[in-house]
Image 1 (cartoon, rainbow, N blue to C red):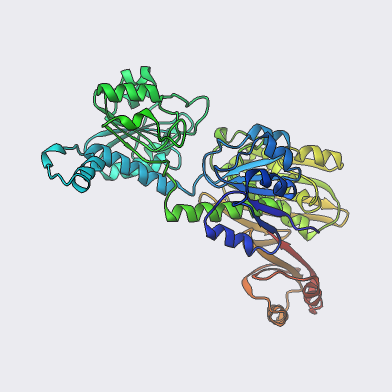
Image 2 (image 1 turned 90 degrees about the vertical axis):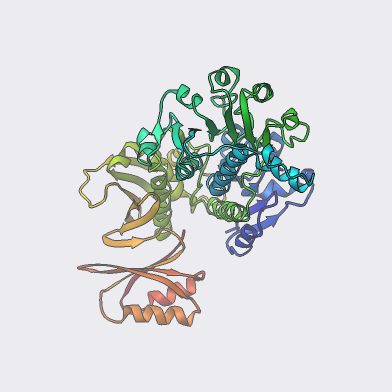
Length: 528
């Protein structure tokens, strides 16, 4: 089987490159330093590409990348990715939306404090001009001021919490969240946008789309308090720049803190001429910690996509992520992993796939089906493209019966998903759930109760439940130089199932030795 190829098209932190270099089951190509025209030749064999903002994923790129299955944008913004073009070709487009959360949050607070105390100007007067004039720099306090937060996602809600620590009043507007998400944190929630416009300080944390471009324009600014302060560390264009300029110049807006612009680099932007604005050059993700997280998450996501076991933070799924609760996504990924595990346990041609769901997750059976199909068929279709866009079509084409059902919630878990896959060899069944918000766990394999994180290199060994089996397994693996990182055991009246998590790849010869252990009934190997 040919190894999938991951091409890094733009510069990312060395930590991500090290992960790719040390992953034995992929080919890694570093192409960040080559000309973008020459890059088109390199990507023709790529299964997955990692990009940042320097490489445009446009029609020319997509035409050249004939083998491409997925793209990982190492960052939040995907302005340079033709997502529709990707979807038409069955290419999954992903980003890394949470890696720079803290960095962007703290930059927002930095701009807020800088606007209130005019720190950059006070600093420049003393350091550059060597003038000591304290009377020039009477600022204002955050304490007691009312902050309006537009968008209450990963960054917006963290800004709100930090503002609360400064003893500010905080109100948020976000029509895509339940009010309780804010009120449970002691934040006021409003459905009336005018409540935001009445605040002393307004900060925006939304994606850039048709609904949010020019969200703050002349009409909205006219409703604001005289002397309002505006912050934008999200995306350029959310505030209309002409309106922003005019109202900063007139004094209607006292100060603005801006990290992002319509056109970047923004070295000739007229906003830079104003004396009442603090500006930075799109530094939201520019911390050492953030760059490390972006690179390692992008590398991890690319490896999952290359293996076909998951497409974290996919942007062109056959579901609208803005319209599903946050608890659903971890179940989708878990379902795909469970199906992928079964497909490695029994490599025979699949005859049917069935999904059973208990609890609120059962409202999303159609999506669970799609993810299960991708997981089940990825292993056998390693040289073909299968993803969420074409999964159902390929299953139908292969005559695989796909079915799903809602089960009465009789388990101890609020939500549970079960994947049943039938081949000529028989039926394998795996069940799983999510703990806390996103901790994935396999809780049952066939008749054996388990508690397994669906990740890593796994040996699955069924055996007669007699003394000495664990010792024999340990001795056999030690003789092969394989280290055990975790050992989970499930038992029933007829025997036991050991799931052994190991650090090294396991050869067929090693599996043969394990199968020769006297009590062993079956041995299989899976890599998730």
